[in-house]
Each structure stands twice: as structure tokens, then as C-alpha cells.
Image 1 (tube, rainbow, N blue to C red):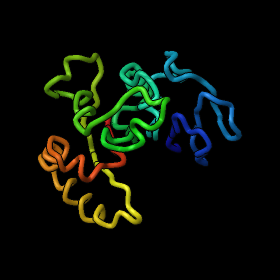
Image 2 (cartoon, rainbow, N blue to C red):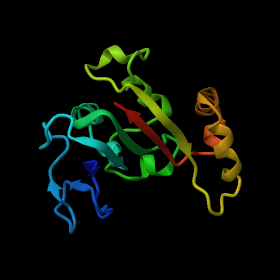
Image 3 (tube, helix red, strand yellow):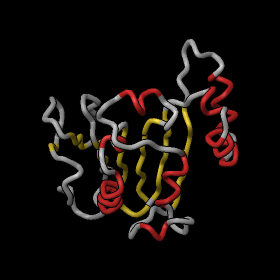
Length: 177
């Protein structure tokens, strides 16, 4: 049995073998819907993997995460990319409604400190990373691995002037249901 994969908010990033979902009926989009209008047109626990790249910053993401949790199979993976709060993209795009730190996603994990806020929880975060723009910004090749050494380093980075001196680009997180 092949795995079912959903590419949420795909835009023009159409993935072969995936169900590509977007708000706009672009070429290659399989399902056209507004992810903020729930329920999504899928059965419970239908997907093994869901990709949500550069989407959550545009929506009220708490109910969206609830719906993605509902349609994700137990043991399935939800992969997310959002701009880090220090990224120029966080504030430059007028369609962005929300900003994120790496700690934002810890609220949605089973047995987390503030997990009682929500009626759904992911089993764990299997991967979390703060990413930095590379290219001509050569120092980011050194900054990124140091910041991502451990959760304490990420917390130190975000809580100090280092995050303003060396602004990040994105946060990558992978939840397991």
C-alpha cells in the first residue's frame, strides 16, 4: 500500500505523487480549498505525511494545526516551514499574520508545559531547526550549526542580542502524531 502525502498550500510547488492543495486553482493543484474553513475535505487519519511549507504564517494556524492533526495517521509526520521572527520575511510580507519562535511548536506536543491549551497533541517533535540565509552571508555557515546544537542553544540565541545580530531565516519542525 503506497503512502498518502498531502502538500498543503502548495502554490506552484507541485509535488508528483502527492495530493497538492491550495487556495488557488493553479496548474497541478488537485484540491482547491481554504484551509481556514474547516473541516478539510479529507477523512480522519488519511495521510502518512503532510507538508506545510510557508503557509502557517498566513493563517490563524491553531485551528489549521488541529485539522492537520485530525487527517494525519497515527505515526504520521507533519513537516512545517515558517519564517523565524527575526527574518526579514516575517514583517516584509503584508499577508503574514503570525510570527514564530522555535518554542511556538512545543505547545502542541503531548505532555508539554502549556499543552492543556489545546484538545489535540502530537506525540513528539522529531526534528526542529532554526535555518539561516547562506550565500554571501558566509558567517551563517558557522552560526547555524552552533545555534542548533541543542534546545538550550536555540533558547539562548532567541533570548539574546545574537538573534538580532545574526537574524535567522526559517524554522523547520517535524511533528510525529
